[in-house]
Image (tube, rainbow, N blue to C red; front, top):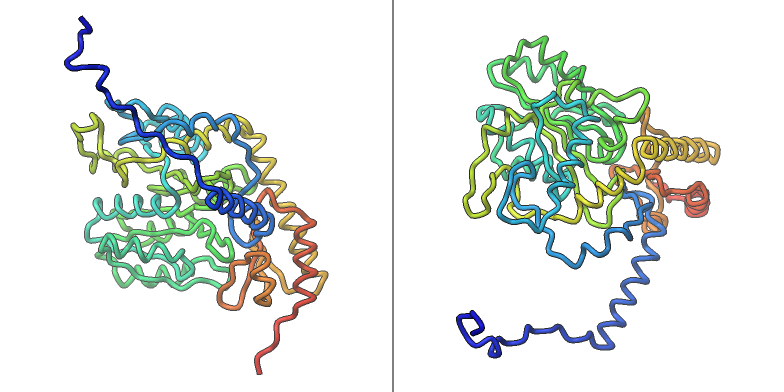
Length: 392
């Protein structure tokens, strides 16, 4: 008696993948070689590459899927939600979240975190208007379109920071409508940081009892908690939600991020889903279960001292890049406490070689922890050897 319900011998063998053909293997090898080469020469995008996750390679054999709320039980257990909770707890502490009133999860990246913050704001203040500066990341306009939220663009200052006078006057004309402030904690091109204390002061001055502030801290959220002076950007400064990109200042082979919000607000939108035995509190149903391990590994292997040392190293190299460029006759500048060095638009060949983000007549280099002074020197040589032709 086998105890089964059928003939076990008749169970078909699982389908096994065939070995790749020689041309396919060749194509993969060529792609790997190109990826290695391209990774050595990008200076214009905020992505860290100084990481090593050999400890985690075995987990790629399993379908890690963090379904639902990371703080609720689920019938699905092939997940890394215990590690995800530790990652979120770490950020909650360093973003000075209110005790017993915070919640978050590991996202696919900063855009998803921003979408979540705006979604919360819309549900809490359905008649609200979103205010954001003209230097805000392009994805925010897309998120506002998705959510159908009313919005007004505020002027930016020359350095990319929001124009507080324009914000004040625009709010003054709409004092009967709850404001939703989308603050940039490191703009795309100049790494300008909107000051939440100033913004909160304006809202207090206007006596807005209903308001919401979201901090888009994609690049700077992983650095600002460990910087002196500390920028005004977190919960203690007035934020209701914060989004951070994990693959930027921390570094990850897979794009990821973190979003944190006040739990009292999240509880108002949560729904129970019997299918997974969990709560529907996230943007996506299935979520990457590998990236929480990546963030957890970085936190545990570096610790606060190591994270701070990486940031200090990046800031030192940004100072070097700015000074070296100016000594070479290049009109370079950066915002206080920024690792982004801005300079006049470079020749197309230089932009392509060093993968430099360029817009509105400006290029920049972002001195991530992996950027070396030798790379900066080589970039300067290329800029000087390839002057941009002046337009007549």
